[in-house]
Length: 441
Ligand code: NAD
Ligand code: UGA
Image 1 (cartoon, rainbow, N blue to C red):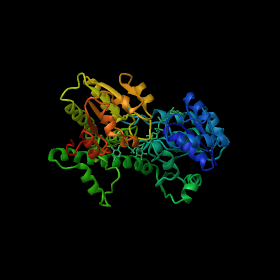
Image 2 (tube, rainbow, N blue to C red; image 1 turned 45 degrees about the vertical axis):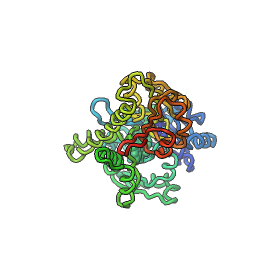
Image 3 (cartoon, helix red, strand yellow; image 1 turned 120 degrees about the vertical axis):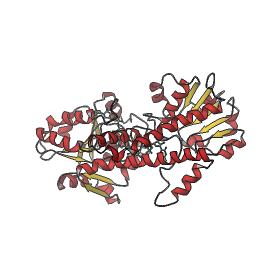
Image 4 (cartoon, rainbow, N blue to C red; image 1 turned 135 degrees about the horizontal axis):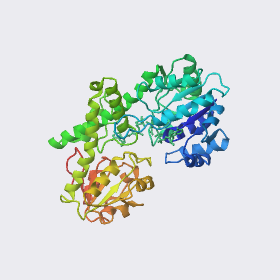
């Protein structure tokens, strides 16, 4: 089948490459000409495991092409996936829908003469409930046979390719059987491999996405709230989380305590959901999300405070090493990165801060030119008074605490992701602190 993917960021580039991989002819569209040039030569504009190989292959077969022209998109296919960003509005916290509107408004005038009988515009972007219905009305005025469906995206950065090819579910909100049937046809290889497709109305499809991200955020903030109680009582939040997670009704995933959630989605989605619920007069139904947000942000300042205590109460003239800049491992995405928020807060309190990350240094440097960066861990830790482990890249777990102790000025570590082995680090002479955990060393 032929389809277009409008917006080729983290979601769109992966979706386009995966759709070509399962046999479709795909045209990726973006307003960013540099991005389109990179993708055309098979280069992903960001780091995502497995994407580079898949892009190269899809571009080489000719099944995947890219353009900046929405007119070309309208002529190319009768199914258009909208994957543009829906960032947080800077003042209201609501979702900023200007990119979604620009994409649909930009495509609409070309649909009338495109020669296709039934055009389907499929939203994958995360939007406030009610957006799809509004866009459908607007689109019908320009192209009466065009229909809008909503197919929210659940991929995680760092395993986006695998999540797209083997999703746990596909949700399709549509107003006609034909629209759902077309999406079933597009996703046929995934459905044949056992992925369930849940067909629903437009509003439910939009809500599934926000409810799911809100639930995940709630789980993380719940365990971080428990870490605060552990700190007040001497209990150990890691053992608590393990014991809770063994209850199959609770489950162990998204119960990892520490620095909390960041990224371009969980934080902005709970704020956008709150704003939309308030608009609907149902603010009290999701009022708890404000607390989820506050608990989450608090873990950043708690981490800074723990480090400050370790350096004797003041960061002035102290060297601080930060391990991790990406908002999560296996990604170079630094949007709302908890690690960089902590690094910047410590710098503001007077320390010299040096940051290491295996993939995200370039992005971090352009967003935080005031921070210093190092391309290897030992360089970042040279003469450090404290080291903070803030993004749980697997290579940090493999670090040799004995070798690193020889590089720093004081062997003091804040493990804000709880993946270092306290026994090994303490045996090498380190003092190790973690939120909600006993003191080690
Ligand atoms: P992104 O910022 O990485 O990419 C958005 C792309 O859209 C950019 O390349 C931008 O140039 C392009 N764009 C903007 N306006 C355009 C227009 N009018 N026409 C064509 N292209 C345009 O965003 P993202 O992280 O891929 O997220 C996209 C959407 O998917 C958001 O709603 C997000 O909440 C949702 N989502 C993201 C993830 C994720 O892990 N990143 C996962 C699930 C859902
Ligand atoms: C999240 C969801 O997991 C995806 O299903 C969703 O599609 C996506 O948001 C989206 O809507 O964009 P993502 O942001 O890529 O995916 O990453 P997650 O794995 O969810 O991690 C988010 C943040 O939570 C990271 O900062 C991570 O370090 C943190 N986290 C995660 C914890 O602090 N504890 C945990 O137990 C799990």
